Image 1 (tube, helix red, strand yellow):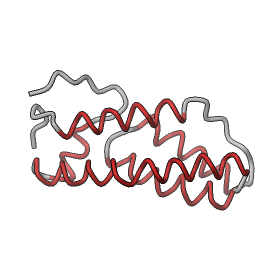
Image 2 (cartoon, rainbow, N blue to C red):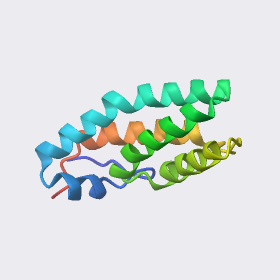
Image 3 (cartoon, one colour):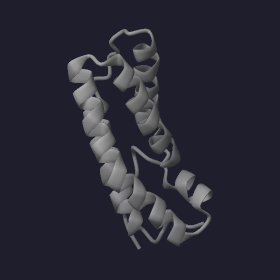
Image 4 (cartoon, rainbow, N blue to C red):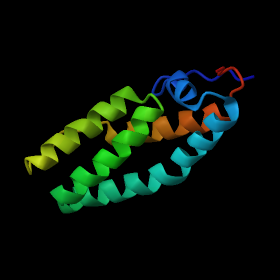
Length: 117
C-alpha cells in the first residue's frame, strides 16, 4: 500500500494498457530505464539547436509519456516536436522539472499496490 499522490502522471492509464500488476511494473521499469537517456539526448539537442534530433527525440519521449498518463509533459513534448518541424524554438520552461516529477512518480508507482487493474 502506498500514500503516493500523483500530480504529473495518471497510473491508471498505464494500468489499463498493462492489464495486470506484473505487466504494469515491467512497463514502468522500461520507462525508468529508457526515458532518462532520451531526455538527456533531447536536452543536448535543444542546446545544439538540432531540430531534426529535437523532433525525433521529443516524438519518441512523447510516446513514452503518453503511456504513463503524463499529460502536461506530453503536451510540452508535442509543442517541441511541432516547433522542430518548422525549425523554430519552442518555449518549454517546465520541461526539466516536469520530466523529473514524472520520473519520480513513475518510480513510486512501481511499488504502489493501491493501483489496481
